[in-house]
Image (cartoon, rainbow, N blue to C red; front, side):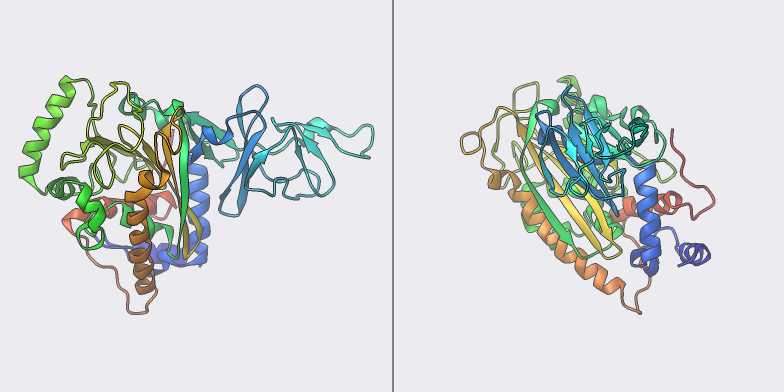
Length: 417
């Protein structure tokens, strides 16, 4: 699809309606999406407990690129393109492991963990080894969470990107957590359909009986899938929420919520809401599933949601947190990669059961997989036409506008600081 055809497809889009069909399935559109996401956004990829010791590494895929995330002997976290500087072979062939050095399996060029070339057999004596270090990828760590950006320069300011999340996550000691369990939900659907589903709760009542049994129904009407995702519904609940919020502010647990509009670089949002139904945490029975990770040392029955950008999300409860990475794999393929965090001192089988911790979201995401794949199948039909959004889908109406800015197909393209 040419730029002209892309612009034509985008111009078909109307605010308040879903996107035109080709934007959900075309290979050229997908390539443009990946380039825009990888270079303009800081992408959440994992928690640093995955590389707890020097030499520990894992690889992460972003489009066609493979990135090595590794901890060096000085405890610094690095990100390198998984490409040998000799003839381009992949270096790390396993998804994770531990190594004293990074050695290419093809011709044994060897790099230290910081990416410097240390050995290249039979090269001339005047070979400039310093010029052949591994290509670096931008990487930053915030509260134990690892983010990468694939811009060839420094990329957007990480400090600006992350600044507003410091206060809202200050109560949660995420640095002192570890990954208790992780799961990938391969989904045969375009990443935008996956995101749009995640950003609205219009579908929750018909599609997610388990999730709805855990959360307050009126809260879901008022807030949908988080701050800014529902348009003025459930005024009665807002009275209840305002009283709860005032009490939480007085206790020092509540900070300002925010929800960005479509003319912002990252489309971020964050807020802390009561789970409801008297639940201490987000679990099947509402009871605690792990030791506390909040400084007040009590279960507060609330959940903090952070949308760093549409493909990078964190939900934090009193006793566990959940990281979501929505990883586009192809025009009709998305991996929903999820990791659950608990206190680093918690013992599996004693302090927590991984199956219990992930139960609510495992059920919910399997249901999401089904409904999103059904959505994609229908969108691929020649009879599909963009449909109008409800009042509970206001956030994804804004997402469409943000997305067209992201890939530079409207008058005002996205910028970042």
